[in-house]
Amino acid sequence: ILHLVQNYDKDYYIRWLLDNTRIHIMPSMNPDGFEVAAEGTCQGGQGRYNARGFDLNRNFPDYFKNNNKRSQPETESVKEWISKIQFVLSGNLHGGALVASYPFDNTPNSIFSTVLSTPSLTPDDDVFKHLATTYASNHGRMFLGEPCKSGAPRFENGTTNGAAWYPLTGGMQDYNYIWHGAMEITLELSCCKYPPAAELQGFWEDNRKALLKFLGEAHRGVKGFVKDEEFKPIEGASMKIRGRDVGFQTTKEGEFWRILLPGIYTMEVYAEGYAPKEVDFAIVEKNPTVLNITLRHDVPRRDGNPVETSSQSSSGLFSFNPLDGVKNIFEKLPLIG
Image 1 (cartoon, rainbow, N blue to C red):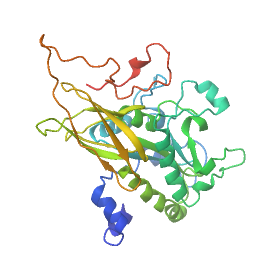
Image 2 (tube, rainbow, N blue to C red):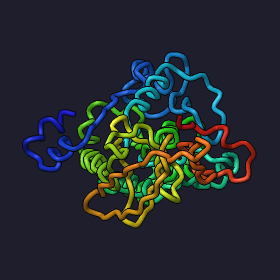
Image 3 (cartoon, one colour):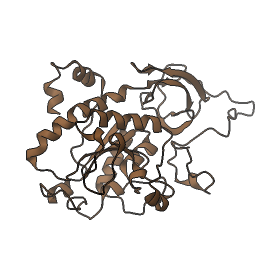
Image 4 (tube, one colour):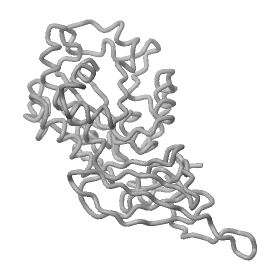
């Protein structure tokens, strides 16, 4: 925070970043754990759990498995925070390894995945790999992919798919992505879980460039507004990129953002009381594409009912189904009202 504030008038990139980005920083999700953790403790679980003995990064709703752990106050507060703000990009900071890990963290076959190290890939795998690589390649050492200790895995280019490393249930990055459409990756920044304070300057130097470059990735892709014929914003419109069936929603101002790599895409938009719409658009490397979409109210039939749309239209934020053929899987989906 201090670096951003102090360099606003000195660094063009930081000025651009602060002028064009809404940045939120949560110093710690687990203040209870921080209080009992001991500086210089590199291994073990001291400080991992909250005062009630819960691991908060196993406490979120999970798409692949039923998470029966009682939701904690810290988790509920973060869920409320995420639901109120349309986050585009997020980095979840951890210690204990040196790697950028991307979704999915969980898999429908967690037993076999533990043995076979099977990746569990999202529909936005290209974007997540790019985001993880952006961080690792700009980090002082992460891109080397070196293991923290003998027998630990080596990470090619300093990145890994979460489930390929080890599957877990109730992680924050999967929740953020599936329930709210935000691109979150987990950044493991230190082989030592609580490094000595004397080493903090070195960690800052290793991570400074990576953090700044990562924040800038929020401006990659497409952004715009969804409005009606009278130019009034449409809140809560369901949006998704064709072929990438994890969706996102518009804000109360009708705004939307989505990180995408260069290419040609089709945006699918649905909102209650409006005719669905599809719009083709292109993404280039340098600047985000501005895409403003107008939805028209449904024209009622003579019997007073709206015109029926395709039965394949998605009403959920998450319609991609990696468990194709498994009965009742869609009962787990967070639906958009």
